[in-house]
Structure formats: C-alpha cells, structure tokens
Image (cartoon, rainbow over all chains, first blue to last red):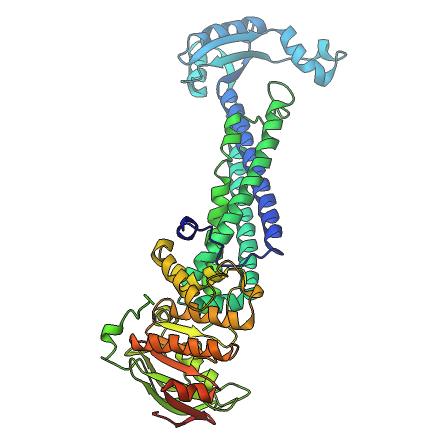
Length: 293
Length: 235
C-alpha cells in the first residue's frame, strides 16, 4: 500500500540512452572550460589590479641639478622636500650604485662607469591617500628643485585597461559557452521529440498541455545539465586547486595568482548550466509543439 | 466501480458532440469524410460501423481533436472545438477517454503507471488516484500484472490496459476504436459491460467496431459510415 501511495515513479518520458550521455559529456566539457576561463579571468583581473595598486603607491622623480650643484645634492634636497608632502610615506634619493645595479642586467658592466645616469628619487606614497603628481611637482617647484615627476599613471592606466579587457573577454567566453550549451540542449530536445513523437501524441491525447510536455523536457535536460555542470565544475575546481597547491606559496602561476575563493566561486556552475538547459529545452519544445498545428 | 463522469450532472444541457457538415480529407485521399452530420446526445451510446476505409478512424480523430475539420463545424461539450486553438485542446481532452486501435501505451511505464498517466499529467497526487487505478486494473483482469510493462503483455492485455487508462478518470465521452478487436468473446462481453456501466453513469460512448454482433447485443444506436457519409442510424 505504501508503495502504491509513494511509488518510485518512472519518468513519463522514456530515456534516450543513445544521445543523453553524449549531451552530458558535451555540457560537462563546456562547463569545465567556462569555469577555467572564469578562474583565469579572476586571477588576471586580480593580478592587473595588484600591479595598478603597486604602481599607484609609487612615484619616480628625475632631478636636474642647478649650476654649481652636484646631482647627488640635488636629489637629496628633492627627497627631503618630498618627504614633507602630505600623502608621501618615504622619499629616498637613489645613489649611483643602486641605479647601476638596476641597469646592469640590461647594459652589462663594461659601459656602466661611463654612462651618464639620471638623478632619481624614489617616492613611496600613502596607499590610502597617495599624493598626486601635481602636488609633488608643486612642492618641488616651491623648493626650487628642477625635476620631473612620473607617477606611473601611463602604466597604471594600461594595467587597468588590460584588466577591463580581460573581464570583457571572460564575459564573452561565458556567453559563448552558455550559447553553445543551450544550442546542444536545443538540438537534443529536437532530436528527442522527433524520436518520441508517438509518446508526445499519446501524452497530448491524454490531456497534457504543451506547457506540461515542455516541462517534461525541461526537467529532463535541466537535471542532466545540472549533473554535467557539477562534473565540469568539480573538474575545474580540482584543476584550480592543483594550481593553487602546487608550486609553493604563490601557486603554479605567480603572474596569475589563484586564490581559494576562485575555487568556491565555481560552485554555482551546476545551477547556471541547469538554467541554460531549462530555458533552451522549454523554448525548443514549445516551438516544436506549436509547429505541430 | 467508483469511477464516475465528472460532469454527469450537466450532461443533459447540451449534446456531448455535434458535427455539422463536416468534411475532411488527406492529400492522397481527399473527401474521406463528406458533409457528416452527427449528434451524440449526452449520455448516449453509439456504435459506429462501416467497411474498412469508410472513414471511421478519421471521424474518431476529429472527435479526439487529433485533426481539425476542413469544413463544417465540430462542437464538443457545448463549445466550438473544431477550430479551437492548440492551447484549448487539453481542456477538451481531459473530458474524454480515448481507446486507440494501436493502444498507444507507453512501453517504458508499468501497467499501473500507464493507467495512472492521465491523472499524473493533470498534476493529481498519487494518493488521490492510487485506489482508482488499482480497482480499474483489477476490474479489467490485470490485477496481477500491475508492474508488467506493455511489451510483456499479450494483445488482449494491452487492449484492456488501454481501456482501463481511458475510463479511469470517469470521462464525459469515451471514444473507442475497435476496443474488442484483440480480446476473446468473454472479455469482449466484459468490456462491453464496462462501457455500458460507464454509460449508465452518464458517460457518452462512441465505439467504432467491425463487430456487428457486439453492436447488436449492446442495444446501442448503430451508425453506419460509408464513403465518407453517415448512412444509417440516428445521424
């Protein structure tokens, strides 16, 4: 009696054992790729913003000594002036030895002693309220220092533009993947409905509305996509975790740092895959049923 | 039987089905039906006979709204149904029980699930129809084969299963295409009694059959379809 009241009900639609495993595999692969592109976009965005943040916290000042003044003295005077500006944490004149050490990898030892080097001051800015290039220039001018301030805004803008571009590309990749998954589900729905035309007619003649029949396909492909999406997301989570765990504290890819929250952010993937499948199956099924008129 | 037609109370208000000047044909065989006029009063019992190719199955397709008339009008339950929009069809079909010549059973479902299908499709809870399904299967002699799937059933058993599915909801109209074609004489009598008992409860019954003896024994009005026209009976 209990079995009759709470039976293990077979699905109303027969299983399509031929096509469904393939569809599940395709959706799983698409979800895996979408998740990887999401992780890549997140880490690239994080890296680009990190670079921009670091650039925003620094400025470089090139000092031109006055007549009768040594370059080192002019740089020291500029550093002293800049250290007193609001928004500057530290200003330090770069001595020739430090400058040579920076250039050595590029020009070698042979020409370094004869090379005229600019007199530079490196300025570390307050991260929360950095001094602007204008205020630094104004302070130097007021102190009578002839100097050019480079606040790295050119590089910072490029890094931020790159981050924006990567985000847009990742969104496009996601939309394309979702579109491909939707197309695969739509194709499977059409094929399934063609193969099960007699079943659909029987359901229809037994009082099932088009919406009810479409709902059966929705449920079938929604569940299938959720399972496949979970498989793809788990595989991508494994890959991202491996990238994070292997290769030391910065992971396998220090330039594209993966953090644990990136792994967790993939968890809605099955839900998104199911949503795409639900929408694709419903619209396809309803369109095909209406075409039977 | 506890199954009863849902709208037996208003059965007398309008005919269950009315066809006026209905014509229908296919590309290969035009004029399968020509100027068919037929009224099935509520609570009536009709047999539809005629030679093969006379158009019996096509007429049943029109009545079950599987096809639409190409001319004339078709009313069901007092409403115009011949030109009904697709979205309106389920409401008509839920008031009908249809028995197909080829059974139209779902092979992947058990006998019990096949009979339960109309209720399940309408969203009813299992507890609300489980007893009716059990009782119906018992009545058609398939009480011991609740879990059997149609491919494992004989032709006669499939037919009884199809009949059980058609009548379990207590429809206002039963349309049957050769419902006794695959059963022995004893079972044919038993099925006829089922239709008669449904009819006594107010269900309108139309049976297309070659079995002239059964039609005669039923006491029902016999309609004859010939060359696409109803030529006999109370058309």
